[in-house]
Image (tube, rainbow, N blue to C red; front, side, top):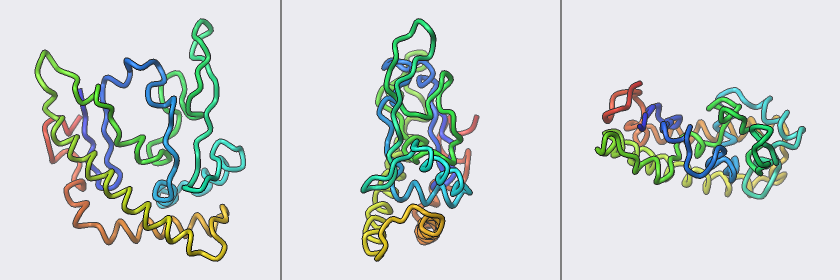
Length: 199
């Protein structure tokens, strides 16, 4: 069953299939997305600047050309389970960090298996609205990330990975979300669109 949690740029999609992923206990966390420039700005705007600096220092987040790469580690969930490489923030019960600290993709991505899951042989009533939210969010975040990549490249100091740089990214993210309020209107009111949105 899909649950759509509408909250503009912070919209989240959930699926009951994730807890029993057919791909294995780590699911898509075996190949975590990067924290792109837009993700980093979003995390900062939600109060996570200190956390980002701590994780960069701990080398759980590694600076790369497009933002920050999430370190992958080899872990096992039980003493009899094989070790598997996966996101450093994945634990035995799923993600160990809050939604406000994750890449936006981690919050809005659902695989095709989740979209195709059937309830008593019937399509999930939230499928259509969830697919639409996924498409809108993906388009917005990709556009913002292209813009922010150009802005970072134009800075004389580039990506300095210090508090002022992160604050700048946070402000740039907020500027873009303010300018896109019309586009985000469809994702602004939790529980008001699509069957299965509340819950």
